Picture: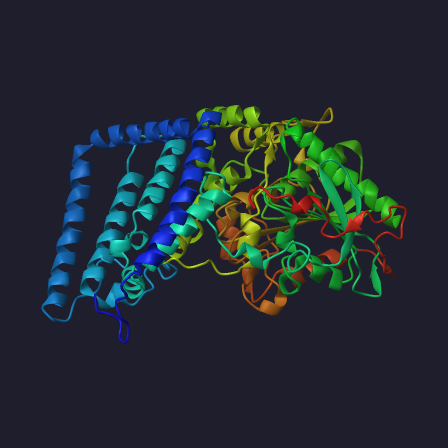
Length: 599
C-alpha cells in the first residue's frame, strides 16, 4: 500500500499510551464484573445458537446428499478464482487488466476508499471476498429439500456471517484503517478500544454500539420539539395535542398512533422533516399517542389493553378536549396493525367515530412477513417467552439488535469500523439518535403479537381474534383507507403490506414510496428527495399493480393531504391545547418519551 503523500509514521508516546491502558484496564475490570453478573441472571444466547446450528446441520446434510451439485458449485468457484488470479497477475506485470471478476454493488459503502481499486493487493482481497461471498450465498440458496422457514433462516444467517467476515472489518485488510494506524502511531486503535469499552459500559455489559453523538440531542429541545401539551395520560400512554400554526383548522381532529417499538418522535425529529409540524401547517388539529416505555409492572398488559388504553381512550379524550366525536387517524407500523384491529372491533360494535385511516408501512396479513420471520419459530418463541416472563418484558436492546441485523452493514459494521478501528466519534444524526432510543415490550402483549400475528396469522381470518369479547373481521372495516408502503422496506415488505388492499370492505388507496421503512415515510416535500408511485387500480397481484403504476416525483405527503381533506370537514377557529375540558398536564413531548433503556 502506497504511503499517503505528506504523511508521517508517528511513534507512540509511551507515557500517553500507559495512561490510556490504565484507564482501559480499570474499565475492563468493571465490565467483566458486570458481564459475570448478567450471565448469572440467565439468557437465551446458547439456545439461539442451538436453533441456528440445527438449521445449518440440516442444510449440510441436504447439500452432502447431492455431491454432484456440490462439485459443480466448487468447480464454479475455482473458475472464478482462476480468472481473478489471471487478472491480478496482469496488473502486477503492469498490463491492462480485464474487467473485474466481482464488483461491489453501487450502494455498498464498504469499499469506497480508492485503495480498494488502485492497489493491486487490496483489489485482490476485495474481489476474493466478493466472489466467495457470492458463491457461498448462491450455494446455500440452491440447496433443495429444506422447508421454507429453515431455508430463510440459513440464508439470513449466512448473510450475517458473510457481512461479518468482510475484509473492511479487520485492521490488516482495510487500507483506510492501516493508513490511519501508521499516521497516528496506533492511537486510532487505542481510541477505538476506549470507544468499545465505553459502549460496553453504556450497555451495562452488553455491546450498545454508539451510532451517533448522543450529547448533541435532547428530547424536547432540538428533537421532538414541536410545541404542544400533554392533555391526557394513563398508565400506557400520554396524549399530546399540538399548538395550531394556522388561524383556522379542519373540524375533524387527526390522531396519530405510532409504533411502541421505538418512540413517536420519528415523526417529529426536527422542524424541517417533522410530519407532525407539516400536518399542523396544513390546518389539522394534530394529536399523537406517546407510549410509555414499560417495565416489569406492566408485564401483564395485553394487545387488548393497548387498544383500550391507546386509541379508544384517545378518542374519548379528544372529544373532551375539542367537543368533536369524529376524527381521522394514522397508524404507523405496529401502531397501524393495532389500528386495523381497533377499527374491526369498532365496526363490530357499530362505532363510526373514525372517518378515515392512513396506514404507514403496516402489516395485517403476515403470510410473508419478510426477514423477521427467521426469528419466529416455536423453539425461538418459547425461549423468548421464558426470558420475557422472567423479566416481565423484552429488553429494548434485544429489539434494537434484531432490527439492526436486517441491515448489518449499515447499522452494525460501518460503526464497528468507524468507532473501533478508525477510532472516530460517530457523527451527530437525529435519525440514528431516535434509532438508538430503544423501548421495552410488555411480556403478555409481545407474546400475543408474535404468536397471533407472525406465527398464526389470525388477524386476517374472520373471527380469528377476539378483543374485549368481540370476534373481529377486517372485511367489516368500511372506513376510507389510504395505505402507504415503501419499496425497499426490510421490516414490512411492500408486497406483503399490499395484501391488505384485498381485505378491507371500504374504499382503498394504495401508494408506494421509494426508499425504506423510515426514509420513505419521513420524506418532507421541501427535501424533493424520494418519489412515489400511484395507481387507481388494485389488482390482487402487487407486481401487476407496480407494472401499471405511475411514478410521481417528490414526497407522498401532499398526496395524503389532498386525500384526507375530503374527510376533514369545514374549517373552524384554531384550537389551543388545554382550552377544552382537559387541561394541560405538561408541555410536549411529555415525560413518558424521556424514559430511556440505555443512557
